[in-house]
Amino acid sequence: MAKRRAAIPHYGTTMMNGTEYYRTRIRDANGKRISIYGRTPTEVYEKVQETRRQLAEETYRRESPTVKEYCEKWLLMQSAHIRATTLIDYTSKVKIHIIEPLGHMRMADVTVDDIRLALVPASKKSASVYKSVNILYKCIFKAAKESRVIDKDPTIYLTGKGGGVAQKDKIPLTDDQVEKLLDAIKGLPPYVFVMLGIYAGLRREEILGLKWDSVYLDCDAPYLTVRRAWHTENNRPVILDELKTNAAYRDIPLPDCLAECLREAKKESASDYVVANRDGDPLSYTQFKRLWQFIVTRTVKERTYYRYENGVRVKHTVHPVLGEKAAHNGKVVYSLDFEVTPHQLRHTYITNLIHASVDPKTVQYLAGHENSKITMDIYAKVKYNKPHELASAMEDIFAQWDAD
Image 1 (tube, helix red, strand yellow):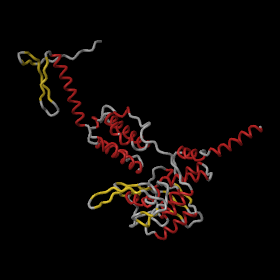
Image 2 (cartoon, rainbow, N blue to C red):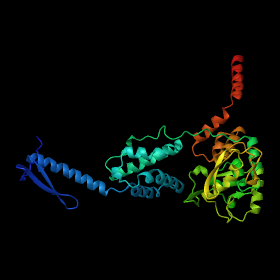
Image 3 (cartoon, rainbow, N blue to C red):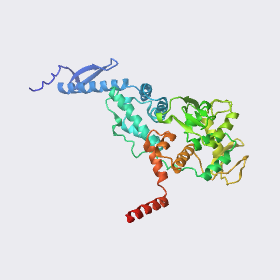
């Protein structure tokens, strides 16, 4: 059966410059009348349909929430079923990489090009950060489409593969470097932090969230329990009892050197926290950076700083020489010819476990890895990155084959 075509309405006519035109009027969303003209009724009819489509689209876009409004709503919805630590991570990335560049735009107006431009700063971060920001974009716009907030999802063409800066292989500290580091900071604020990193393998947030009620020093085999994590919001510390993964909850035995270090620290402590500020509170982000500067200032890494001289801000470059004292602080000696990061302490701990022939499952537990792949990747790099040992093992195998 043939589809019936809509009947063309009867339109009025008007004369303009001696020519007769058909005319009709429609109203926009604000009630304003719009006149539409055409040489034939069909032309007027088609223009009316197109104008109504444009007005509907304009109304839809105008009523669409801004990216900021929808992202905040999306984060609120996520808070019902994700861990607090995960929500903190999501919130930070959404604010920096989505709301900051696109927050003023309407969700319905965002194009894939807008998103690609917004992702440029994220592409200068690590590959893992770039990938996670891509995933957040996809999740947010997919949810908006499913809720009919937008008609089209502009993220369907995005991919997080191959983006971001590839991270360098983590290099553990050597025994000699560990000794130099501990000698350089003995008696200084970061000493206990460094000891916990090297000899217990705790993450930064686990060390800064550690309380004395989780450190058991008076039993036959001293140990500590990881059950809190430190985070910051607007530079203020937030201590969470909920960890990122179930694997992060673990008991870690303390070697004698760390147990003794913690006993001495506990005698001097007036805080509930193992690593605390002068008021006994957990560190803010700024305070942690200041704590780590005790290490940075003792390295020979070239660095710059600014000083005001006669009212003028002057840039100075320091070229530290190993063994010399700092020009403006005689208590600081440039004694470290290598750089150190907080995560490097933990990686040193894990590496030492592997060198000590601790089995992979135990390493996974002590490291708090939820995914065994993470442990095995590290295990393989450490255990099998010794060509001379592999060559010797292979020779023994081939010799056995020949004997058979």
